[in-house]
Length: 349
Image (cartoon, rainbow, N blue to C red; front, side, top):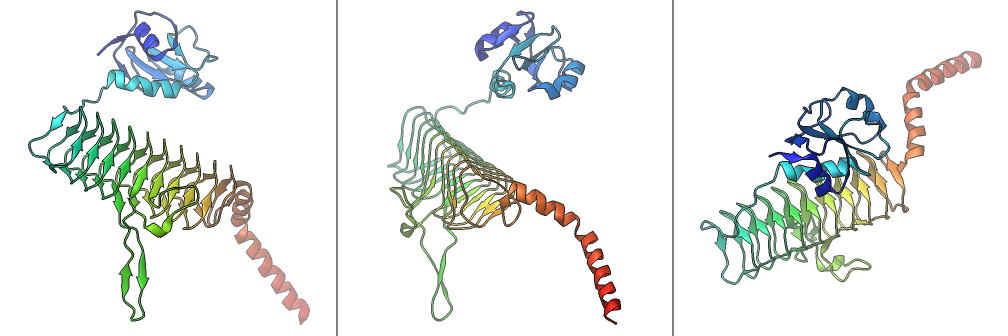
């Protein structure tokens, strides 16, 4: 599928420099792109790769020195390159309707243009919004509500009481609304599971990564500022693969959890918070708006807005830098202490 460079500029709303009739047939990185492919350079650090590249055209910042080559000028080159991907690699959409091999409860409600794939199971009283795609082998429990234009990919499971907003993407293998990890011990030592039936509420434009788990809550876990005791995920939240969100937790709008992040139960995460890969938060703490938690860091107490944290237990990144520097000097310091002890022992004699 070929697109004229002028057509791409118009579709993406970018300024064109170069031959408007240049035919672009694909997308690639700077190192691999050919003369009929589009690439991007996000800033000056790409200048050398840009000079070596054989790309027919590139998306570049307004002040990037293109040396007279064909470019599309953009304030956000990577973002606009991502916007160009569907033009060359459109993802086929399943046809509307219920597949003959799907199991659909008689009282499930489907709005117009819904697609239900083979071997999907839709439970009693489930409600699915217009334009939503339920892919094969998805399980939707009773009383689940799914908004408009959602994508629920194969093998995902939505348990009872889950509510999804509009344009939510749930990747394969995700489990939403599973029982929270809560037990109470009796006097004879047996343990009783605490029922978690308050569900999960997920806001519009949120994406749930593959094999991510979001636990349901129970009524005693109502949080300040929320009219629900459900585990709550805000608008525009992005959860990577293999993320664990514990029961009764909440995530504010625009927050991001990278791969293998774990939130213990009742963790309250503010707006536009980022957790790096394999980081974690202890339960019953508040992560303030704009907090940045670095990879593998462990947050054990409340944070302040905009804090940048590293290490375990998590600390301010500047303090962590000093601690790391001291850590590297420990062998030398140990040798010095031993020499001092030897001298003191000799002098004492």
